[in-house]
Amino acid sequence: MKRRISSLFNPKKEGKKAEKTTREHSIEGMTNLPQSFSIGAGGGFGGFGGVASPSLAGAGASANNDRNMQSAEQLVLDLSNPELRENALLELSKKRELFQDLAPLLWNSCATIAALLQEIISIYPVLSPPTLTPALSNRVCNALALLQCVASHPDTRMLFLNAHIPLYLYPFLNTTSKSRPFEYLRLTSLGVIGALVKGMT
Image (tube, rainbow, N blue to C red):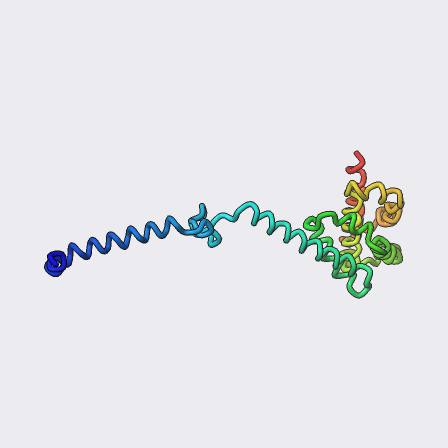
């Protein structure tokens, strides 16, 4: 009864005690939070701006690699379709560094190397007289970039050489036109030969 009377005449003191008790409960509650909600090194709560755990980062990288591989497989299949080939050549040549083991995939996929050689042979008629257009040059150079990928990979290098595929590039190296499409063609062809020689040494 005296305490109730005291609280009535001294509300400020009771208010401070209640505030202190509330603060203690709050701190105790924070210390009992699950680990997943603990504050991370990045300044945010774990899972919300904190540093991702190594296991989550590894799982994310693995999922990303799987998506890249699925994309590569679909694009390689598209090479066998004349209507889809041009886009597939462009996408694969641009992203070939992202696709792991692209060279074995190209070599072992049905009719893929034949499709790339078809692209190369198709421009022989425009070598002499020199009527190669920039669009044709870009397209065949995309095919050459994929062959360079095969030539530089240790698992496919000797298969590439034993199939005498470099012979298909000699007509490009023998051209003499100074126009940009031809210079680009010669430079990319030399890149294939260079990748083959570099890998063998």
